[in-house]
Image 1 (cartoon, rainbow, N blue to C red):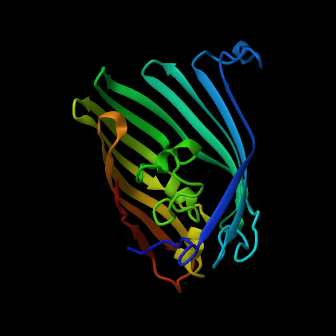
Image 2 (image 1 turned 120 degrees about the vertical axis):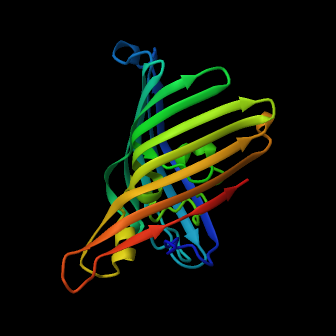
Length: 267
């Protein structure tokens, strides 16, 4: 396994992220009169954040080494729609500027359809398809929800921001299930996906100056979790096999492939 750079090795990272603007609207919303044009089962949310970062060594999202970097900002809009009781659609569009690792531009973080194959008081079985958040560890598939994060920046060895697009989501399909018992709740997530390789920093690391392109290939990821009654204990294990292919644009370079196999134990 080749480790992706985190840019925080031997660093003391001190971060401050200020939400300069946020709005939330779900129909019906009498103050904005959104109930006139939004279905009752649709929600729309938005966020804007500006970060201020200082590190004791190395740079993280701009020139933060012994100085204050403001080169980290995000603007996002997301929504969900329960088309039917068992069918839900969701999408998030984000503009992001994060130092040299992400120099602006709109992208679709996720856009998916989720359908319940089975839904009872104690069990649920569903399929999800599209561009789906990747279930890495506890927080990756909800990392854009501030209340789920234990800190301003998640641990970079697992939830890396330098190659955020690769880590955040992938195109494909998942089988998801959960079951509630007297001893706790059990859940699993298994998916076949095509990794996203559109991170500028990811390409520079893999290509290392060579001429060509990197394209995601068929990969898989699986996660199993347990939560005790009252949510006092939470355990999880994640394993994935991410595969990308290198296509050289010159005969001076050989074709190749890139494997990333994270094994994550969470507690």
